[in-house]
Image 1 (tube, rainbow, N blue to C red):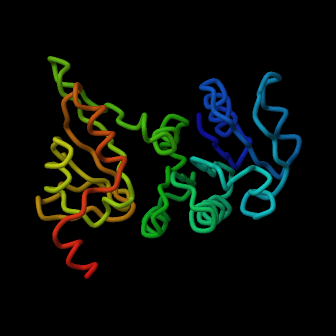
Image 2 (cartoon, rainbow, N blue to C red; image 1 turned 45 degrees about the horizontal axis):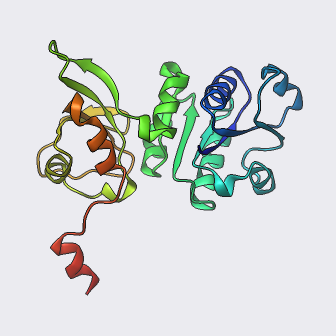
Length: 230
């Protein structure tokens, strides 16, 4: 089981905390308003941390150094982005996501490599997709036989910069489109995955486990990589 840190004990933060707690994970939820913790159910086994979510002392009390993922879902865009950057850049948390209310800022944040979910289309499920990548192949469409599925696929950060064709060959899928800076685009085979891109692919249901296993790890070195190291 993994450790998760959530910033914001509002309706959404509580939903995430209860879901992760029910799944057997350890959870620390942060809020600067101590009365917000009253929203948590009586049997919640996680840690309640009173403090500012982007303050290092507060994050360390939440055991951020051992966190598998961090979700910033408070009511403030700037606080969410700042806390997420601290979690990623100072504590190297592998999976982060920030809730935002201003979709116009999405491009800026995605250029920083921070996955964001706009409040207008936000749900706890969308955040869970980003902080639970091993469960992150989510079907948006299934063809009639049930053998093929179109879904969002999580990738290891080391795949950024690799070509779409290389990803397709390595994982045995077909990239249908990318979400880049909040907008969908159909990539060419020679396009490369950029930091912040969300990958949507058509794949065989029977291969989903293998696809997740392959893309959750860094790609194998290529001759070009080996040449660069010389």
